[in-house]
Image (cartoon, rainbow, N blue to C red; front, side, top):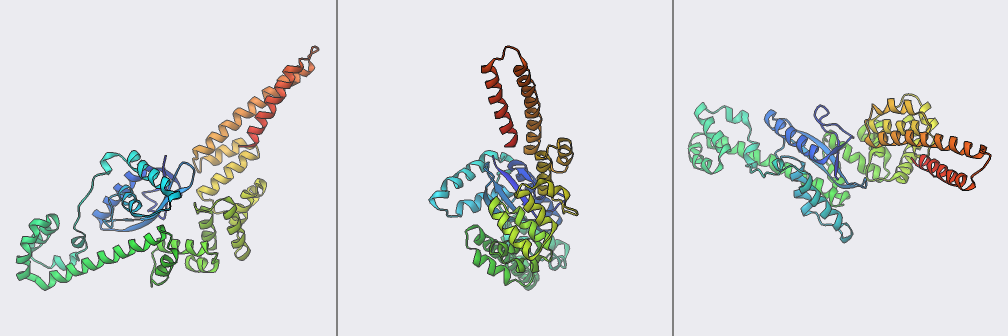
Length: 373
């Protein structure tokens, strides 16, 4: 089963830093892409495709309103098919492509054909044409084949003006394609080229800043990451949220970062990874993201504060933690029952050694299961 995690998506439409079912993510991106096209707006969002083992199978950037793809299904299918992988990762690639088809509703698989150049024609320029001329231009956009016949008419009407607008549209498309190609360097592992291309830009979008900061963090260039984001807490949170890092790698990175830029958030994260759950409950003024709320919920669970854990669970709605809390209550009840039965068996005048041994073994097993939660 695949899940999608978005970073930097429009918050009013898509939940960030939360795992979403793949089919739901396809529907959301499809709807938002159409909305942004109609409103002539654009926005970018990073996304990660996460497999059942919790590892990311694909990462990319979706450009809402850009006409690049109608939804993430088409983007992932197009890009993943072209990416070359080692033999060791070939199985993951095939699994990803198989799950794409399995989890995507048929209504979102339909291919669309769009004249990329005419999408970006400057509408202010065209609006200066007469009404019947504008109708002619819009016909060009709607039906390219028929539109080609009208180019002769436009040639005599406002040839220079239209060609200038059309060339501008093609230039914008070219820039967008270059941007997409640049992002693909990151997917192909050519991160130095990717990083250099971002550093060369005079202005960066918020999404590009996050990507650049993440690349700096990978190289442990913490000062550069802080300089680009201008927020030490946010940068440390980027380390915490990086799905490519395992627990040991996150602990090491956060510890190194905290030595240069100490924050309560870093202390919170480190305490969690070290199992110091009492400390994370006592640290003040924490920027409580969804992930940290999950960490706090788990900490309360490990401390046996089940009712408080249930309250905190409302802030993250984690199905996995809900299952752990439910199982904790079941195991606690079973342990209490076993302890009572064991005490009664030991008090019995006719002690059943075999029964006592079985109860001890079962009690030990349940306590181990509880400790392993």
